Length: 243
Ligand code: NAP
Image 1 (cartoon, rainbow, N blue to C red):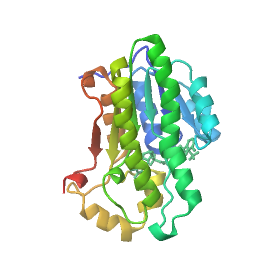
Image 2 (image 1 turned 60 degrees about the horizontal axis):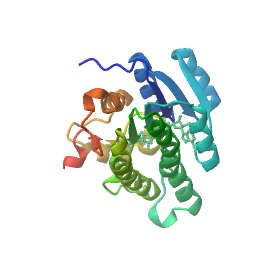
Image 3 (image 1 turned 90 degrees about the vertical axis):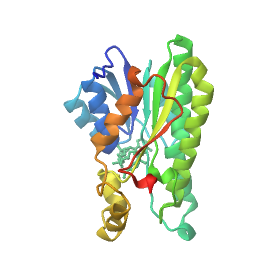
Image 4 (image 1 turned 180 degrees about the horizontal axis):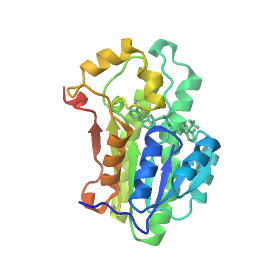
């Protein structure tokens, strides 16, 4: 099976680091014209040195900036809502600021960017494909991850709503739900062996995901080979959610 995106424009949010950067690289290697959106300009500059892409620097926590960035992206055939943050705090100590920022980046930005992109897809009448990068944290409670788990649960439900209302326009929408993935975010939240050990013990494959494990699944879901897969949440979790 050869996945190709020649002639397609792919917007990837949070493309500066980690999973988003890996997705941007893979989609470019599969022939897509990548538009990399992220917050830190230096990350975008270094990405542009690695792959042939367009870049947009924007803070997706800001609703107007998120909309404007999506408009600046121009024609988008494939969208990956990947940008996300995690601010680990125990439930009783979770602050309003951390909760609101987490929801703004992990849920509201995906909602706003998709509204802009989907309107363009509908106008052109040729459909499209969207993948939201959710988490295993959407389906289970994880200690110290109240805002994060709530945001990913909301993102799964947003995915279903997008699938329901965009499907008739031949815009396919799915989510991927990775386990702990070895990125700057993964290191920050799970780098302490006291936390990573018990988590690894709950993963039947006994390993964390690599960014490329997630990127491969995203590329498949974006591709025509997945053209009847719609409204799905795909765990990439070494079996964590099966136990
Ligand atoms: P990461 O290493 O922290 O990278 C996240 C990227 O998103 C960075 O380039 C970051 O830019 C960008 N970003 C964050 N907030 C942004 C904002 N407000 N505006 C624009 N860009 C923003 O995280 P990751 O591990 O690759 O995570 C990517 C996605 O996978 C997230 O949705 C995350 O929830 C999900 N996920 C991660 C794991 C894991 O264990 N790593 C597991 C399951 C799901 P700056 O650094 O410049 O802010």
